[in-house]
Amino acid sequence: MPSHIVVVRSVMERTRKACLDIAASQLGLGGILKEVSDIPFDEAHIQSVQLTVESGARWAIFLDADVLLRPDAVALMMAEAEKFTTPFYMMNFRILDFGFDGPAYAGVHFYTAKYLKQALDFEQQARQDQRPETRMVYEMKAKRGVTSVASTTLVGLHGYEQYYRDLYRTSFVRGVKFKTRRDYILPTLRSRCFRGVDTDLDYQVMLWGWLDGSIYALDHEKAPLDSSFYRESAERMLSQLGLREKGDYRPDPAWVERAILGHTTDERYAANRHWICPPEFFPPVPTPPSLLQRARRFAGKLKRRIASL
Image 1: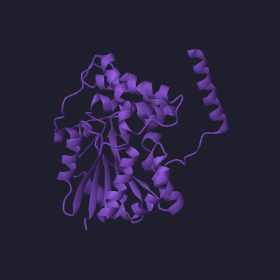
Image 2: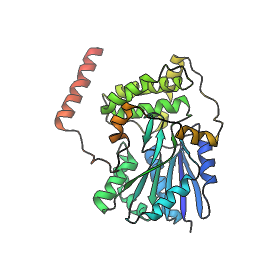
Image 3: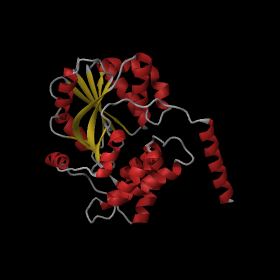
Image 4: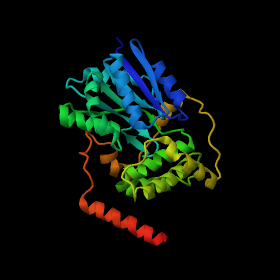
């Protein structure tokens, strides 16, 4: 039986091959590597859980393909899990996130594999949620009494060096998921759009995606989890900005560590760290919209339809 399994979930991101190669180089004895690709995220998460259950592994690490791990990250995560005396379902590790411009919890999730079979009992709830993985975490705590925890260890980069289309898609989704956080995300993106460095275009693309997502959120509770939904609007965005899609990513393992060690956060991030990267991890209880919220949403839709006549 393998001691651990690493599952990479991809939609052909620019860093996909680099993510797989780094994970493979860090597997060590008793580790196996699998990839789940080109399917909506809810299905990708369910398949990741199923692969882990079938493997019989003790530990599981689920990686998004837009993550670049720092050296020895897999060994560091396993060592921390081994020292943890309280049973846990998921241990959330920190990454340096390109869009949030600071440490966050996204893209790297470490599991006690024996609990994943139980988590499949909540497959239907996960598929209906904007955050399928987080929904399973909540259900395991609420219904099985198995908590999830947060680590302060930062294990890699998330969202760096991506295709424009994926930066657009990620930012669009965040425009829906974090629509109440526009006071942080919108100024952060705008402030980085015209600084005279290569990443300016990345942030311009992300700002466009955020605005499109925010408009979509006026009529929708959830952003689609299928990457193909964003293809046409991403192509339109590239055309409007006069951009040609990026070429292949050329890995530089030393750059990952330099990017992490050289990064500094600003006051705006510090004021919002409590929700971007909270000291304790546990997802909020999912609640359906109130009657008043539904009435306001309906009124907004009706007003826009009348205005378009």
